[in-house]
Length: 77
Image (cartoon, rainbow, N blue to C red):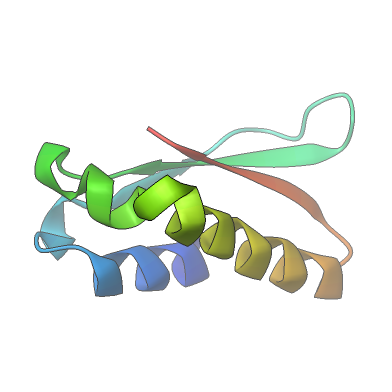
């Protein structure tokens, strides 16, 4: 899952070396939180107009997680 998020984000940004993902432990609701970190100048590229790209990233990640019977959440930091 982490590799999928990294691959998506690195394809969108100008500075792919600055992209990183941290993963929290499973919380009490059984949800794993992925934190996506990008360079300051690339935040707009990852979020997109009115959050459309961020929403698409979250949709793809949730779909992939459902195939593995996981619950996830993606936070863009």
